[in-house]
Length: 379
Image (cartoon, rainbow, N blue to C red; front, side, top):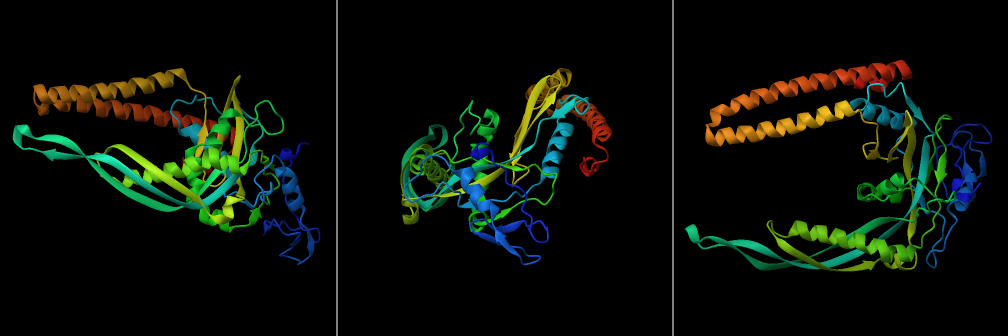
């Protein structure tokens, strides 16, 4: 088995057999909080093996410095999938009768962490009204300012290698891992992310095991090619917030300085994700989500053509009614807009009842397949 395919097994005390969920991954030994027995830490060597890979900058190790624990479990992930399949209007009504899953995976993907400060000077043109009456016009004048701040950013320390069994993932999962929203989530919680040196494993034996992707990128070149651009975008966004509204031609000149401790090395952290593929008939689909925030997800699903066309027809019909109402308001008087308004309300009620009925059918089908799940009582 290749190093990145190693699975992090549940850690149990060799003395009392209790499941130990929190411990220092860098420690040579683990002390059981129940019986106080001390034994060798099996995770330390396993994580070193799992993360071993290509060269990084001088002074940096391929071993991840930190691990962010899963905040969601397999039940949360399953509930996400079921909820989305039930509440999405154009999903076929027989989805649960024909649904089949491949294995669910808990993936740990390595990221480099960089920390430092930036200074940015910016300039733009801002509008100003000049003249009066019919001669009033808008002219643009130069405006400038500066912004500065500290940063801590994450960049993937893993690059997909399609066709390779050692370090490859499906392309849709790769896009999600590199998505700006995913990066934003972990940047926002970096306080807890980087203060923690604990790894947490589930005590549920039915949970899927971890799979660790190995570091195969260089920390310094990743900073030069990706990290610095991320910080420059942060500075540009902050400059855009500072500049007056109505601005145009915003330009920024940004200097970025890594902290001294990060110039010759970078921290690396393992970030958690859930992933599965599922089938409907002979079609394949996927569902992926953050292991921290169950609302951050991406997925594909089968589409019932008749429902999809009805949804599009309703949307275009509502747009047409709004246009008709505006035309009637300007030509025949606003009192006549009540006609398209009444038609729109009636259409919305009918469409809502149809969607509600379809949702009820999917819930009933899910109960027939999965039993009386708690999530079904909340939908």
